[in-house]
Amino acid sequence: MNAMDRLIEKIIELKSPVVMGLDPRYEMLPECVRNKYSLDLEGASKAIWEYNKTLIDNVYDVIPAIKPQMAFYEMFGIPGMQAFFDTCKYAKEKGMIVIVDNKRGDIGSTAKGYSNAYLGRTKIGSLEESVFDVDFMTVNPYMGTDCIEPFIEDCKKYDKGIFILAKTSNPSSGELQDEKLENGEEVYKKVISLIEKWGQDLRGDFGYSSIAAVVGATYPKQLQELRALAPHTFFLIPGYGAQGGKPEDIKLGFDKQGIGGIVNASRSLMCAYKQEEWKKNHKEEEYGLATRKEALRMNKELNFFKED
Image (cartoon, rainbow, N blue to C red; front, side):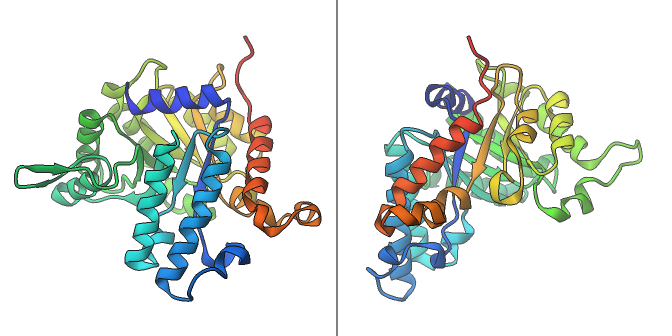
């Protein structure tokens, strides 16, 4: 079974198109967690790992996936990378899909090195070692086909997937992505057409390819356009919640069956324990339960599945 079929089956099983972004800023962690550890890189990383583990324990049975953002682990050095590794490994042990948000993009042997680290294998003599072994990673296509092909090769060989940046949710994305080519086509439309082409050999039983796209919820018109232009491309949809993406906008990126996308929620899930209503009736130590409650609320709000 290819990576996209596994993700879609998990979404359908849990009736949840939500992926929890794990972007742990140290200062956002509850004091009850931070106060357990030393004020150094190792202590901060241990706090992050405990925090992540608790959140995973509270949502693994109600949402299908996590999406750790590498920057928030790399900034803590080797201990931070250990927290990242432990987070990914634990989530997979709990049956979750792991999407790493690292937006790699280079050519030749460098792209192959990135792909080896996350999707493929690292070769040491006759030994082949799986390093981070995640299900998906994000990729920047700015350098064209040369920077995508090594990832596609490993997707085919190891049943993995990639999400390629197409139309991102940030305010200045239009500076490049909305620019028009000589034929009048916007850059983001050209990118999505390439993604459809790159993914044609990796379409699964649901009709969606493991070569997928990142399309932001903050631009609903473009989201709707790209769903029509790329019927076989699954979307990772950031921008929900704190960035302003609304359920009615997000629905435009789904197909008539209510599948075709997974919606990222980071701060709204990670910081659910900070909501004033929750704080009135709960202890800070119950931060995991707050995340679970918010995940269940999102599931209900983002349930676009067609009723049988």
